[in-house]
Length: 364
Image (cartoon, rainbow, N blue to C red; front, side):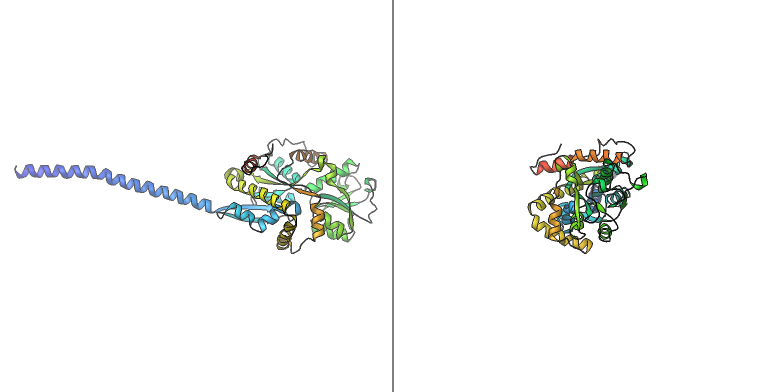
């Protein structure tokens, strides 16, 4: 074979090798690129999971005891896991919590029924969902012993307080006055209702600057013991079976849509905390007081705590029927222009999943 033929064969072999090698190299590079992209996506997803933040609101009241105890002692953090950073915000009353929810300062909050209703209506049913109950009962109308009030006939010219305009106790007080034939001063009547923080209500009570107040526990017990008042009306007496919602858990619809796993863990933590508190009342008092002192610098005396909790039931049942009645009451006193359609306010899907997994009765 001459040299030209040999050279031609060798060249052909080299070309063939190059032709077959290039796709392999390119394929290898593509595989490496795909692998790198996959690893980057997985890393990004893991980073997103690690950077999840839950901003949760609550009040330092007995009907939010699950949050006071569970957020304070770390039970909720354990339930949520180390990849969720929990940030808390404490409120005096519901309207402030709703404002924070819509301002995206909190994602989830414990709250009373009327602010939840108001927030749902103002957002055209788009802003929030109730995902679990927290408490039933635990609200009382307390009057000063020297106020001269023995019956509703004595309300004329009196001055009462509630925690905040439009909050659950405020609506209950105004509805009760209306049922007994009274209008508030701003509506041309002769009864004055002023909003004040719960601690300020006690101070006003002691100074005799108000005649009574409709408040949540433990403030009712405090007004009786520390303020020398008496319970004029236990709100449970106004409801069928004594059951009415005073606290439940709401979540912004965006957060619920984007973080159902986190919301479910909060609900599960609330269920567990509810059961533990109900099963261990004495120990719960100690833990509640320890956490309350961190929040307010004060504790609640044992007798006040027990008096308050005797009028309260902690429950994950949202007591839905009472919410619809609360909406009707808010309409009757002029806080809502129309009786609202609340058919979409509840989303108990995750709650029922949790209850089913724990072998507990689900809620319709």
